[in-house]
Structures are given as C-alpha cells and as structure tokens.
Length: 100
Image (cartoon, rainbow, N blue to C red; front, side, top):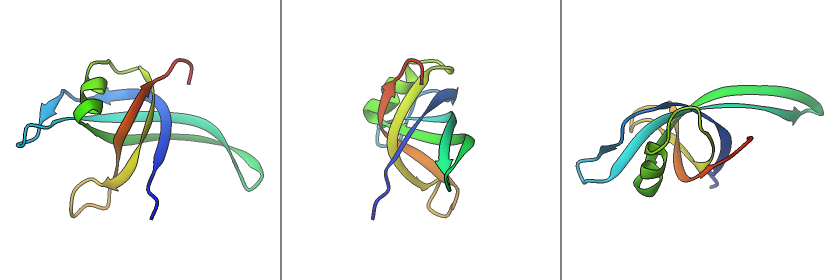
C-alpha cells in the first residue's frame, strides 16, 4: 500500500534536537501549509498545520534552521504513538525552498 506525502510550507514550531535511548537524533516540528487546489472542478483554498517528526540526517538538517523557513518535506504518515490515531508526518527528505 502507498503512503507517501509531499508537503511544502513554513516551519512554525521546532523543538530542540534530542536523542532516542538508542542514540538516534530526533526532532519534532510543526509545518503550516497554504495552497490552492482543484477539487470537483473548482478552486479550493487549503490551509492546515501538520505535526512532523524527523530522524537522523533530516533531524540534524531541520534542527539547524529556525522557524519561518520554507521547506518541502517528503515522508509518510504514521500514528503519533502505538495506540494513537492522531497522524504525524515522518520526514524522509527535507528540502529548503525559496518562494514556496
């Protein structure tokens, strides 16, 4: 089954870089997205905020910037925890973008 997300927007929250008990770098972030999409033949304004999580290389990359940066994040959706149905975007690739 497919589970791939590509979302551009502004970083609006960025937690400090931390490490898992296994020593893996991880950072939580929040992304604000605004765009115009076509749905049922009509334009629709889309605005949302998405919670995100990055590990390893992506965690180090995103931890080095400050909120307000524009990014394009590729990743997948997963539950916030084992028992949670709340979704979190797990970043597998982060690009820094000008003029998203």
